[in-house]
Structures are given as C-alpha cells and as structure tokens.
Length: 166
Image (tube, rainbow, N blue to C red; front, side, top):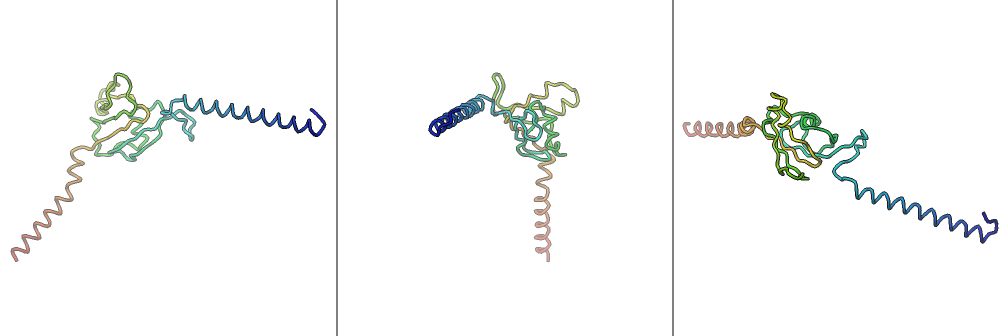
C-alpha cells in the first residue's frame, strides 16, 4: 500500500471501483437467475418448501388464493382450504388450467367421489401452478338458496288473500 497522500487516494479509488464492479456483477447474475427461474413455483417463506399458488372457488370452507406445496394433489388442496362444504358436488370438480400442458385440455374435471370409492388415480388430475379449481354446489344448494324467496312470496300471497277476504 502506498503511504503518500496522492498514492493512498489513488489506491482507495481503485478499491472502490473494483468493489462497485463486483457488486454490479453479482446483481446482474441475480437478475439473470430470476428471469430464468420458473415464476409458477415459489419458495414459501413460512416453510421454506417449493410451493405453488392456486385459486379455489365455490363450496369450500375458505375459498380464495392460497399457496400449497408443489406436490399437492386435489384432496390435499381441498384439505388446505378447510375441506368442502356439506353442499359441495364432489363428482364434477372443474379445474381451469392457466398454463396448459401439451396434450391437455384447458378445462379438466375431477371426480373425488369416484376416487374415494375406487381409489383409482385416474379420477384425480395433476394440479399445476395457477390452476383455478371450482367446486360447484349440489341441487340442494340451489333449493336452499331459493327457499327463503319462495317462503316470502307465499307469506305475501297469504297476506293479500287475508286482506281481500276482510
């Protein structure tokens, strides 16, 4: 190392320049790695495991967007959101693919009831990142949703008939 004032300043500038070059190279390498990694899979900050984001709608306990392990199947996924409600139609669960794989349809159906009865994996499609899973309700859900309106209509008709008689 140089002892003189001018040499010390030159040496210090050289160290600063080399440090900046090294930092810029590491930042460039990080950006390059981020561009080549698969954005569909993430490292879950809570567990540190490889995870994927999925969306689940309909007759489940906690619908919405959730992060699940990358190897989760449909049964596990339903368990992560609290399971299906009592009015869920498990014989025809619709899965809409965001990233369609070659040779697959954009919309895939799963039959959990048949899987539970037979144990046959062919009823359980693979879940991919960004899939949207829709669990529709049974006909009893529709009846249950309409029943209050039918009850109000009957009550209004009875009131109308009673006032007309009086």
